[in-house]
Every structure is written in C-alpha cells, then in structure tokens.
Image 1 (cartoon, rainbow, N blue to C red):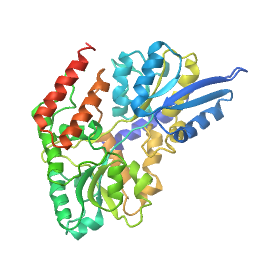
Image 2: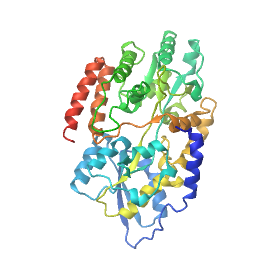
Image 3: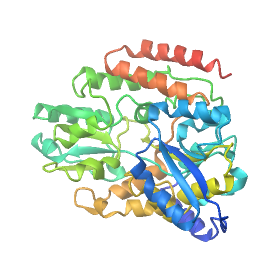
Length: 427
C-alpha cells in the first residue's frame, strides 16, 4: 500500500480539479423540509446544517437524535415500512451491507459519479457493495498508544518514539506496563473501546486471523481460527493478570482513568485529546504508534460514519445535495467535523484536521502526521457483511465475557454457533 503522504497529493489534485460538486440549486417559493437522523447530540450537527441552509434558502432541516442502541429498530419501523423519512441518516460503515440488504439505502453510484478523489481507499471500500456506492463517507477514525510520561520515567522506562519506525510490540507494552505498575501505576494498559470489535479486531488481524468474515462470502464466518484464539488469549491475560481492570464499562470511563494519571498506557483515539486530555491539569503524556504483535502486521482500527439517503424520500435532489455538501466539499466536511473530535473523511478537510494547532504542542508534535500515515498504510475496516448487526452484537458480548474470565476457545465457538443461527435467516 502506498504511503498516504504520496497518495494524498494525487487525491488532493483530483479533489481540487473537480470544480462542479453541487448543481445550481434554484428553490421554489415553498419551504422544503428534510428530516436528518443521527445518533449524535443535536448541537454537534448544527454547524453543518446551518452551513447548508445558508447556501440553500428555503430548505429546513430537522435533526432527529436517536440513541445508538435504538437506531436500527427505528430505521426498520420507518424506512422498512415505506416511510419517506428520515430523508438522510447516518450509517455506521460496517452496517452498510446490512442496510443495503434491507433496502434502506438509495443507490448513489450514478448520482454522484467518481468520488475517488475525495476520500481515502478504506473509506470508499466501506461504503461500496457489489461495486456500487450506497452512502458517502463523512468521518473516519484512527488510534494511537498514549502513555503517561511521569509513570514511565518513574519506572525507568525509556519514552517510546512517535514515528511508524518506533512502533512497539504488544509484548513490549505488556512488559513495560507491568514494570510501571510495580513502580506505582494503578493499571499498566487500557483499551479505549474495551470489549468492542472495532478496536479488538486489530489484535486478530495483526496475527493474520482476518476480520471474522470470509472475503469470498460475507455470510461465511471465521472466528475460531488459531489467530482469533491467540489474540483473545492475550486480551484475556491482560485482565486476568491485573494489567487491565475488569468492570470498567468502556469508552469515557477508560479514558478518564488515563486522564486521572492512573494508567501507564492507553490505546485510544485522537478524539480524547481535545475532549479530555488537553485540559487535564497535571497530566503529562505523549504518544507512540498503535502496537502490533511481534512478527505480526501493523494494523490500526478505522471506520466511522457515512451518510445515506432513504430510497423512499420525496426530496431526493435536496437530500443528495446535503449529503454531497458534507462529504465532497471541504467547507461542508469541516462544518460536519467542527464539533466532532474525530477526523473528517474528506481528504482536504482531513489536512486541516491534521494541521490543527493542538497537534503542534510539544507533547503531541507529530500526532497529525502519524494519523495521516496510519490512515494511508495500516487502517483496516471492520467486516462487511449483511449480517453485521447480529455479528457485532454477539461478538461484543463475547469479548466482554472473555474479559471477565470466560475460556477463550469455547466462548468463540459459542459465539460462532449463535451467529450462524442468526445468519441462517439471511441466506
């Protein structure tokens, strides 16, 4: 795979040469109302709504915030019954295949044309099903390994470097984390999205075990191979040995423990820098690349939200304009990301994110460039399958069981049987 620094120039040139992104838009006298459904706080979506409406007088956009756990059920109850709203909605990238299979997404391929200049390959792959585009990428993600400089120095540990060449192995992280604990750290290692396949898939893929689904058949499961077992035995051992804590619910709580100065290493996303770490008094920290297993492949998590259009919408042209604005224009992408600390998927807007002043401070210098590198070289999307919703739910529950002491191979075998039963209704 090419280094993103090289490929970005070509992507940027293509994006800049595409001068006509949005059609000339002439509004009728009557106001047109779009309903836009997301799982986000309404305030976070307001900047992109305001920016679009400012360019399109006569359009009203009503944002509906729906809890994440209820989102699929709401779509089923409305779009599944032929409702024309929501007109536009956010789609978790690995769920795109499932949403297509259910008929919830309009085929955008012929409506948007070639969008390859605007996004990184991983983002485009995530929204493509059967060589057709079903949603447009709006945000993306990556992760690094943060460390508490005070705790490492107290343990006599040399501070890790910040470039891809300085990548630690998971085995080294465990050794250093235990050493830091012996010198006063409460915990040696925390994962940001504990018990979620989004992050833990990288352990398996670093060992060559795949993402759990056959690349030839998206309803052929593969979660019991030796690499899956080895990866989750490593994961289980971190909790069994007291390196990582059981009982911490997940994102937010794990980040708070690191921010409180109790944790030596924290494998997490860049979103916590502005949301939590930067303003925490007394927290001295830096970062190093996301680890890989010794002899294994460097793999980092990626994927986030794409925006799709209800095929039943009564306002396809305006809905399409709104989605294109947020995904294909720098202005719209930056507006969509302005109150969201996750990276925008649009390559021009991503450069602005990477170059933000916060990432130029002494303890974070080079963070933007590392994110840039990982997105272009090591980023791996989650499995694409029409059975994603069932897969994610069962796998996440199984990972949590493993964290709490369940024997790894039987747990994975039980999960496989449960997923196969759920998928049998999709075949």
